[in-house]
Length: 170
Image 1: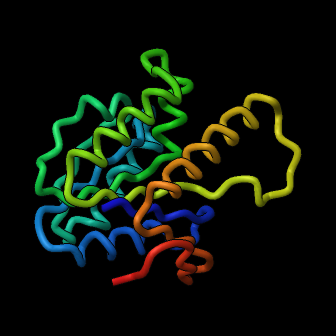
Image 2: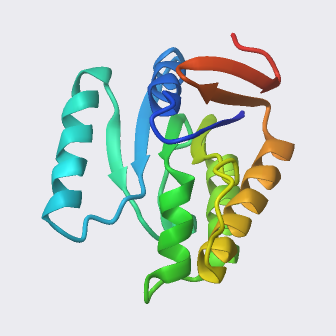
């Protein structure tokens, strides 16, 4: 089963995704995509680990090449988040772009019992963006549409409120 959770920064999408995965029976894996490059990002990773320590997740850290991660077949995976993964694949020296992200997502979808993907909503800011930011945002929007088309459940989170776009909450 595939669930996509989309929302803006601070919308509550991660909290909903964690609750959603915790309600599923079986093994829970938190697949973290942030590449901690400096003290600030390392502190953020530590803060997030502490926040979910009591939830029973095993944490796998993988910022690139999701197709190469070995996921147990009986696992319920929470991918946090697609936005970081895409940026890593587009801008890191070892990144392999959009095709690598799609290969990795295909791998996860076919490898685990349930995949929940957290992603950011883009283009609602109404701002003018530089060409490189637009390239990234268009790629993320394309991935969001691609995943939503495949998803069993698609949920938008706004101000902590759920808007089910596709499927039904259990």
